[in-house]
Image 1 (cartoon, rainbow over the protein chains, first blue to last red):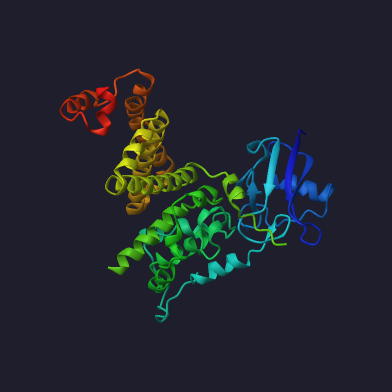
Image 2 (tube, rainbow over the protein chains, first blue to last red):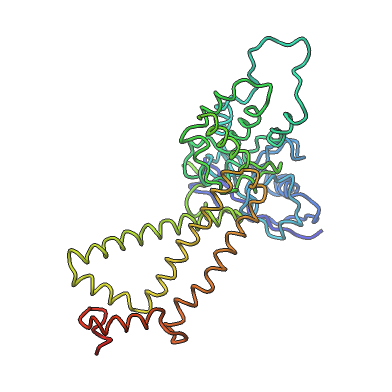
Length: 233
Length: 156
């Protein structure tokens, strides 16, 4: 097995004044994932290395981190795609709790602020609420979000302003705004029609490039912007 | 100590793609054009308040260094306009954002295509490779107005 060098940003708030980079050499196949290499460090070299991972199959959204300078899921990137020397750092913008673990609480607060659930106070119909294929298609892309925060923490507007609601929250608002069964689109558009809402977006496309689910995030944000403008008329 | 990884150096190290570089350049050229306009307004106002200073300023601008600075200003305005148009187009038709990388490259190519002849027109005279544009008309005018400051050296 070829050797791969992992350069990992470490930070232990109890002992470190500032983050430090430590290098670890591990054996890894080209078809191994970056997560396998990180596991190898934790299990056989330094048990104090701290990071989140859960399903390890790209669906729980726990192990988003900066890999060679760009946000990725460690469980979805193969060693052969990152080379023999890999730099691994925590997501940007959120407080580092330890090593690669950041405080996601503000992220989930952003998420909750856009009412990310079905709102429909009309009485329950006799059978299910039907939806045409086209009606379902309109918001199909934004149903794929796994809340990994790769998009929000890749956004320069968010780096500059932690109060910006962020791409992930807008994606989840989009998912319900354009759902024909939902009745609270106006309320959500009102929440996002704010200087800390969609208008902070500068269409940099870092979110779209970072999304491990390949959601066309900037496009979804653009659709929300248009919906706000046409509902104001 | 609180660590957040959000400073300017960290931000510039983020490996964004075409969109991020276009956005950064859009910001930089926007600030550059603003800076130029401020200087330009002050210096043009001097023609009323202090004509001597104005003439002196124009002399300074004849230094070849300023020809390159002017080229940079031209690039800034051009890039800001073309890239800005791309952003406006994307905003009006969000489905075009599915082709955002191609659109960014297209904007870059338009800028490059315009820059090639403009760079030649502006820079070639500095190296004596071409005649200064408008020189003939300038000389004709100086026959009539020999005392105009811009004509003094021509007459000499």
